[in-house]
Amino acid sequence: MPSIFPLLTTSVADLDIVGDYFGLHRLAVLNNPVPLGHFAIEPFDIAALLFLLAIGVVMFIRFTRVSREQARTAAELQAAREIQQRLVPASLPPVAGYKLEAVYLPAEEVGGDFYQGLEQNDGATLIVMGDVSGKGLKAAMTVTLAIGALRPLADEQMGPAELLARA
Image (cartoon, rainbow, N blue to C red):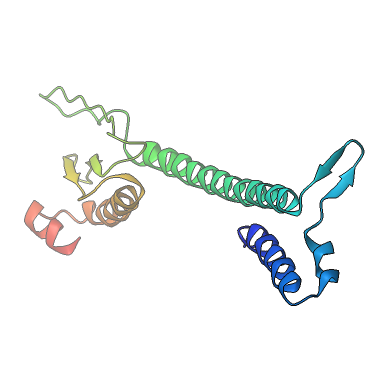
């Protein structure tokens, strides 16, 4: 749209040339410079200024749109990070005869790896580790679903194969 301003000015100048050819000298007014104090501004200069202003407006609108999108994405990632920090425990429950340690450092803001130490009714501890395909927000949400499916099943005293099949 902004590129129309110089095109229109050129078209008006062409009308002046065509008018001159056919003896319509009144059209010459369209191509006359506009006096501004000691200076005269050509119609094409006005069109170029309008073009630059329009480009500036378009750039400003796009910049604000991109900024809003980045802020929204950052807020979503921060919310996902907080959820993931609550779902993936900082430490595993104690298991007699073993020393268990774990740390979770995702490659991006959030990730698709997870582990859980789920204490069962008979005193045993079920340790689950997994890696969801992919990275980022989509993988983190899939981890949330996986952990949500595993937690209630852990209380049912089943072996790993049956647990995975039911999950």
